[in-house]
Image (cartoon, rainbow, N blue to C red):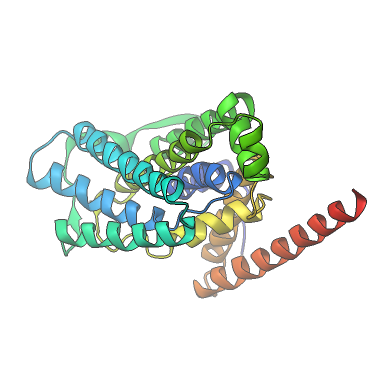
Length: 295
């Protein structure tokens, strides 16, 4: 039943199929590490896909120019939410919830229906692959994800900005006393989240060669679940990018296993992820209490 499940081709496809999820999870890790949350990533992904599709297919714009515009809008959108959160001391949950509805509404303003993309650049991207032996090849979407993941590790764990994020998530009052630039760090984190969601949307258009204003429904929950399953505390200050990679691969592996089985419906993916999420949250709670008792 699962013959060939652990082949090189399936493993490389695991990265390609979950590239959008992985890209959004890299930046969501930064958001959660800082003690925040971003519920707008799914809507921003959908907005980006339909924006790029309209600019390329109907306006005749080069895909790279369209992607650059989408990334710029996503970055500004995220930075604006970060500004509201910091300037007016608003809960990230509520601000990004508003951002979720706003981005989804903007997607439907652009187009109410899905739109296919027929472009030579997209054909080249679909055909691109770095051979790894046998039938395995690293696709363009997988390569983009892995490059962003490597960059995420450097930023999170080896830069002053990353240390500021950990300090902010650990304790904002303590971080302020330590001289951490609270405002600029928060704004930068949400700007990166908007950029990552837009990039995930651009990668999604490579994968589907289309744009759809409804794309990304529930996507933010998959992203948050992957980050939490990877060991990042929802309270902030604890977590790693390697853990998030593991969470994304766990999510993708369960999905692939269901596809290989062929007898189980897709809702079993939700059941499995929900069960894992509850287990990891309880485990995190246990570790937090144990750590508090040993101090």
